Amino acid sequence: SIGIFFVGTDSECSKEPYDVTEDSFARGARYTSILSVLCGMIVLGMISFEWVCCKICCAGCLEGLMLSAAWILGCAVYVI
Image 1 (cartoon, rainbow, N blue to C red):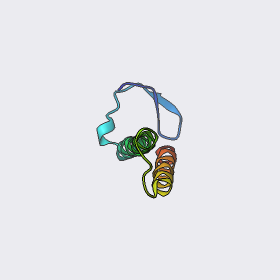
Image 2: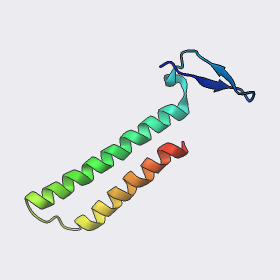
Image 3: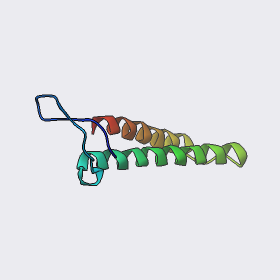
Image 4: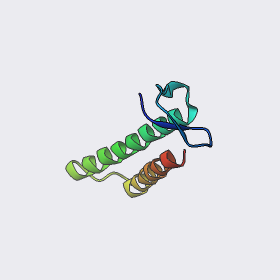
């Protein structure tokens, strides 16, 4: 991707290609975002299954745990 980035502490702009594959922070944020979305999708599947078919034992605890994980991972994207 090509963008305008600040290089150094003198706020000098640089318009050069930026290779994200070598940046561990961008890679970590990408994986954390993917995990957050997957946790949310799992909860959506559990709630949909309960709504359509039947009640799952201890579903409230599992759904709360997965939603908390999705929320924490979503916040971690911005921390990283």
